[in-house]
Length: 241
Length: 300
Image (tube, rainbow over all chains, first blue to last red; front, side, top):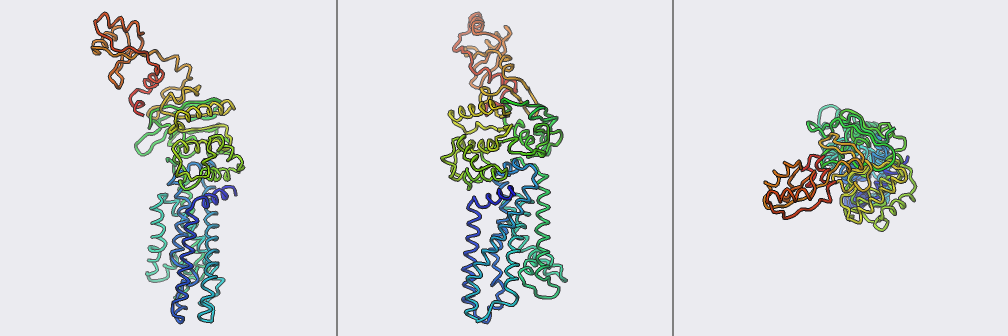
């Protein structure tokens, strides 16, 4: 618990976290407001990002997860951190907890912003509630996905350690490479992060698509798998600087 | 039981051997100077003692146990490794708070150590704006946070001004007087010779000497610096009288094992005019460089 407290303090004692969450949420609010306010009413149903957020916020959350560990290597604070807790896996466990918490926090803030902007405008314009499916379930999927995205970033950061390299790798793999198997025949693509994220957000279209829970489980397997691999590597590696 | 011990410690990076079969032990209490030229393996040894890197062979022990087996790490050993290892965007106080939180150390202790290292005034500012000296103080504050039984400090004098050096010496003396075991590294003997009772000297990752400061001082002989009209002839003549003669970086002679009177007489007998004949106050440093196999220590 004390290590978790320490990680939480680390997150919120630099400006990075505040700035990233702030920018993400403000842009999200503006963007959502514009879409829901300007898109012709009969096309609103098609806009699936309406209540699940845009790539921008999700990218920022992913990057935030990467930063929770790469900043320690970049600035050399990993040494102090592991001096306090020479059993390094405990630190990685605390970082996992912090990543989940900050992801959930970001998810809840998103839901608050989204709910305050999108739902009223939408209802006002169409006289109905937004797209099919339970809003509560989709919002829950968004919150869960933000937590898993943050853990995914943490895992990639622990494996790669170099901050720029890890950020690029995480974004490229999550949003580009992992969506390619979707083009393959069969439903193999469903088991890669990009598609699993979609399922978790309730975009379950087409044959063989995973449902929300299934998508969540697949994404969780990726995120926690990367975290576990990253933890093993961090425990084994030397800290020479 | 030794407070700190390395046994046959070897650390390889690819084909480079950073530490080569190094063994020494530091007993409880007092200041031990850990000396060697830059790149001699001091930092690697300290990092192995702290469990930050894994030995290729051998072991590093703290209070007889591997560092990863420490019960209460921050109260056992405090370390200041390098003055640059801070997040530039975090304030000094918040840096210490993150460490204190992890070790369940009360926030009041953070203010205490900030006071001790005279950094209270700047503690709210982001580390980005700190001078090297301030970073050294912050690193020391982090080391002192848990009131540890052992302190491991890697080149803590780097970047300190003369007042800072004096302050550091007083701090180390006070820590030792309270019964703590202090291992402090440096590539300059004078930084530690005023506080250390013991000296561990390494070069190329190997132990060169483990001695007390008193023994080390007693082993040194007086050195005179000599300039003369014909240095080559004088070198030969002094050598015949059993003196050890070297050239320093300015081209003057450094003469050992022969006093000023004898040097003057030798020069007179050969008809060589003496331009300068001065006893060297830094003969301890000269002996250190000699033990270290000279040159490398000089530039740093």
